[in-house]
Length: 491
Image 1 (cartoon, rainbow, N blue to C red):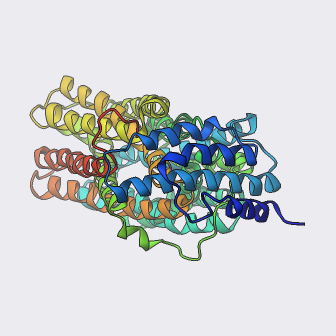
Image 2 (cartoon, rainbow, N blue to C red):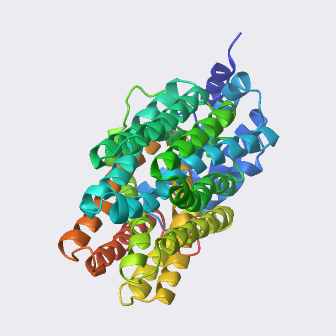
């Protein structure tokens, strides 16, 4: 008696037009898609739209068109075979009530793991102005930077672990590590010790829910991938929003040590509670390599990786610098600066949900480009030339919305442009991009503020910040041109 996956493999190979690994031609793609969907009782409509969209790429060069055809066929092949494997493992249907419970679990995990990182601007402000006034801005910023860098570097390895072990267990391990890191950090009284606990140890623990919460949603949804991923990733923005205000209030009322203890306990308990639902539906291919460096040979992926590096480099700048900028340049209170961070996180939530909803209608890559344009314009037009409260609010509204949408759609673009079959390997490489982007972001901005602006003039730092999304835009447009030059194609 053949197993489900063996039966699927045999049937694919027996189909004369396209055995596994053989490239279907454009004329027969729709019929082949329909054949296999019927063969394995999968809703044909889930894939016919993609098959028809491939036909619109007539102007693409032959290699690009061939790759597009193969990518579409790979998606049909993967979902058909993986669905059979998943049914044996989970017996849970896609896009059902259980799938939405998984999205809720991803939402909570990302809300606390990434939300704490987004709220670091409050700690940066407190360390810089109150607890460590004699330390340089660059040295203090490395606490939050190390937190993000280790989360990304750990994400490469935790992505590999997620392919080989139960994601529910790994998420629980991450929850315990995050809690211990913040509780340990509450007893630290030096920048170096905080870098080891609040930075390094927390970043390692957060890498598990970061990877799981980012990659799981797209495996539970087919027709509403963008919306589901947007809702899950909105958790990080909502977490950054309320945790910024909560952290500020806790520091003022209880002091920084107890603020960290309360945060650590809440994070550990909440993420542990939702870990039983952090499971995959489509069993991933188990790679023997932690990082698939062969992806670097693909021009389109290299362009996407470069764009991602510059986008991530731009991401944390405003979140880290707006609170202190509000005090030093605009002469506002520390709580006012923290509230601006809260507002920006709230608008990033709106961006995540809006772009997640629109991505299924307009195309994720199209929206990624549009939001990158908005992020660049918000910094160049409203922050570079002005030092007023009104223009800073404009930056917060526009940049917060744009960057939220960018983060929401990054994994959706990866899934739809490069295919689900290689998603674990691609996510691993994207975390390498996150790591490099983290190095190119806040540390140079802080160094410019210290050495050029002497901790009072933010002009050079803002200019550097503004040019990062411009560089990302160049690579995204070039990537889109490798797919099609038609402006109205949904990609």
